[in-house]
Length: 120
Image: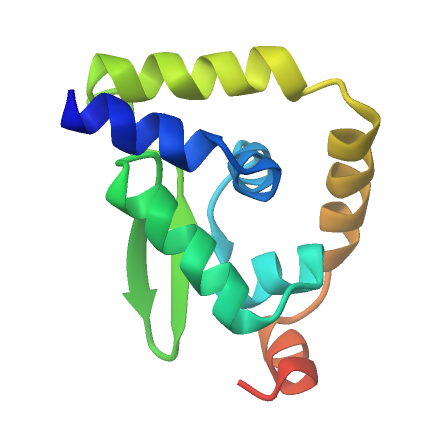
């Protein structure tokens, strides 16, 4: 029951669902996620923490950057099904398409440049 509630809480915010959809394309640095959504770093951190605690994302640190990705196929069934449901339900929305277009541009930008813009 606890895992279910953590997943449903994580999915209850539209911005967290957008983060999950952005991660479908692969691993992203926190600064790229911040750049994509234009949120304060503390807001992004809170969203990522909730998603991570629910098991919906994984993280790794490399040098000064922290990267997030979706879990692999060994994730619990509830996590895999929740992620599939989010993608199936929201992947073709206008907002998701706009995020994907913006993310494509962000991915062409050097991380150090993005980080300097965000003073991180």
